[in-house]
Image (cartoon, rainbow, N blue to C red):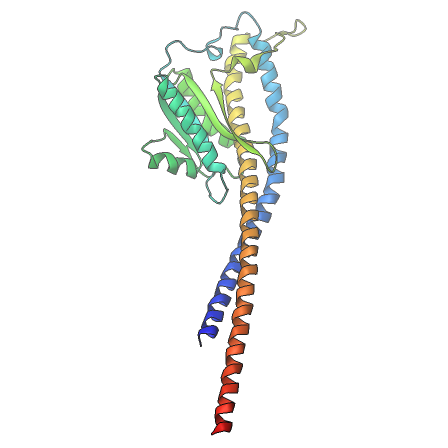
Length: 294
């Protein structure tokens, strides 16, 4: 019977969509729980970031070290390093796409300015994206974007800072996704080396109440790597929170869509069932009439 066959097919589709809905709902709830933890990690790291930035601002305000190489744009730069933070997993809406598009714009800008670009990818999605387009990242990092630690950030930053010190690269940019709220995440590009002078405005210099040992230059030399590491760490934390928020939103949309499909399929199944019953009754009545007439 065509009606019965159609009904069986609809029931199989309903079962499949319902299974998918359960999976997307579970992923939505998991992502929601991780957003809170990720935001707490961002807030916990903020006091250290503010403290080290304040010290560097005050040191940079001193006329004796205001021209430190780490604070000055280099003449005739030739190479820019670009760190791109994406995720290891998909199903996160436009999270990766937006970050990668911004990274491409930064790369195009630096190339247009006559610089070669040294690419560093954090996350499988970014690595795969750029390799597919013919780029070979200088370093790649996987397994650190979901729950980043300071050790992860230090491992990412250390070779890049050393390359800057050795003058192998002249500029360093970080591409990450800034978490504004559960509904808004914005890709962001910041120059982390040389340290952006605008980020150092407002320094008050070294207070006469303090004696600095060793020399301010030596302190700055020691602080800059920590500053860069924390910039990368903050970018990883913000990106992790953004990834979870984007995934929660994508999975909620998928769950809602699955619910709409289920409603339509249920109506179709009910109609098919009613049609099958009507057909069966008609056949029974027709058969009874044939027997009575016979």
